[in-house]
Length: 327
Image 1 (cartoon, one colour):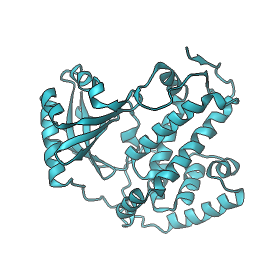
Image 2 (cartoon, one colour):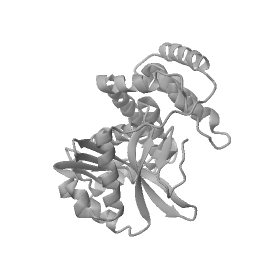
Image 3 (cartoon, helix red, strand yellow):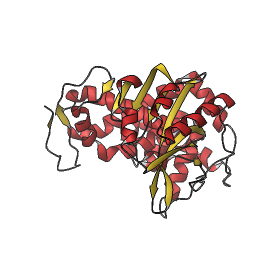
Image 4 (tube, helix red, strand yellow):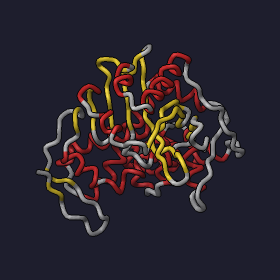
């Protein structure tokens, strides 16, 4: 059974002290992992914001954050000081973001998406505009400058903490901050809304058919669109073969309170799950669909990530029953 250490009186952090974590992040995530997630719940949205701005994508940021949390979960017995958990999480997240950015294919895609001068600045609540604008502009900076700007100007870490997190010196952090701030100041100030992305014709046909069958609750038809070895990841809940899950059964329980539509999050074509409220249909969370040819090979469902759409630069819904929005 999982045991939780008492809440630290100074910083409110609880740390899971006795665990026997799974060795591989596959299958149903057990109750011990759920307990760990509850322990770090107060850090998750901030951690996701950091990973999102480092990777340039709310979806990629969530994936990096999930891998970070699982890595820490596997090693939690190594931590003696509850106050060190915050730094450990951010340091691990930073290292995973750097690994992500070093991937050649990902870097090439990021350079293609962000080499132009078009910048999307969404409307923000009063008092949050400056931080949010910085968050959305830092994608134009090299990784070290990006990290230092985020950690200092958005998350208010000390120079000493930043140096430790990014593996640098205080002098190196100061230099990166100076260079990064100068580059941000030189960026165009006028916001320009990007043109909406569009999938290739084959993927478009597959997504339209998937949406049609899903909204009809034709689960056999939906399954027929997936490959025999299709993989499923539901954040915080499941990772493994789609055939081993009760994924569609869970949606069936939702009755008429939801529908899905094709949309886009941060320039990536996704499916958006819409929930019906007093104001009509509104996007709640995205689902990533990856396909090979005419078959779905991977589904990534972010139903547990309420912060994800709030962190996105742009969300577009292509559905006649939902207000079309871009932010």
